[in-house]
Amino acid sequence: MQTPMSNIAAKLRARRAEARTRRALSRAIDTASSATVRQELLAIAQARHTHMR
Image (cartoon, rainbow, N blue to C red; front, side, top):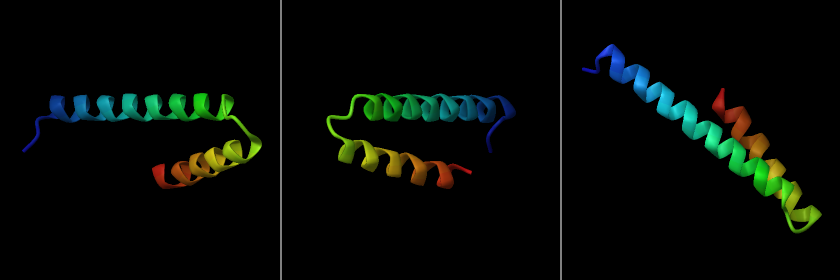
């Protein structure tokens, strides 16, 4: 059984990991080499966003 503090720590780690992923995806979209790659990355970002809720 998890203690409340370890549960909080796990939630914080998960939140930081999600933020890192969002920043990396945003950076990849901003520096995409072509419009096609940018569109693919945007599609990935939108698909991830609907699954995160």
